[in-house]
Length: 259
Image (cartoon, rainbow, N blue to C red):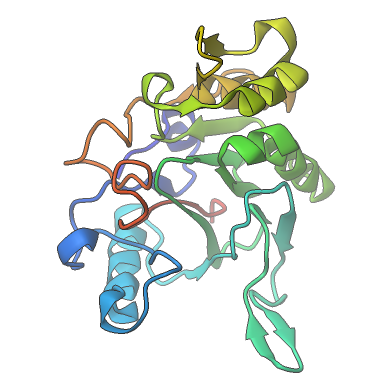
């Protein structure tokens, strides 16, 4: 597990996984936390493998036995808040469905909140006392939509403004090529200083990690940790949706309130 220095100093249980150290097999080898949506049946990583992988990382971050809360991630800016005694699933008459969001906030010390990634950036945030935390799934659409700001506002609503944060390993600037329509969105949001590199053919590169660092500073985190590592360029360490054309596993970023 990879940790952010500021979060670790504050005693906040958290971590970003790499792909080694679990029980999953094949394309999911070995510390996998999710399945591509278009896989079915025996092609999917069994739930029992994912549960065991979560058990291992909970032990590794010093939060054994806590409930892991996840959501159905949709590349937006919706945020869900999980309070003590509240549900961790969206219960409807037709059955249990996952909440749909890309930011999770909690002040419940019996839980950890988790996001799954495989090129998008996992962002973990905590208040200065570690009592309110957030896990954020941030791809380029989430950056443009302002998902970090949404998480920070939800934390403030619980009385724990964002103060500490870490951006986990994600696709690097050199590997994240996008089209002109995506570049235009970053210029719209970040202006002339957008962390992009435009090319003569209209395509270009985006520094997702730097975008998130700037947004965290705007949200109140004075010195966010931006952890190194390129998911696309380091196949031994990380899963990558882009590198493997969708047929790959998922890493996880998870965090819980300080007990």
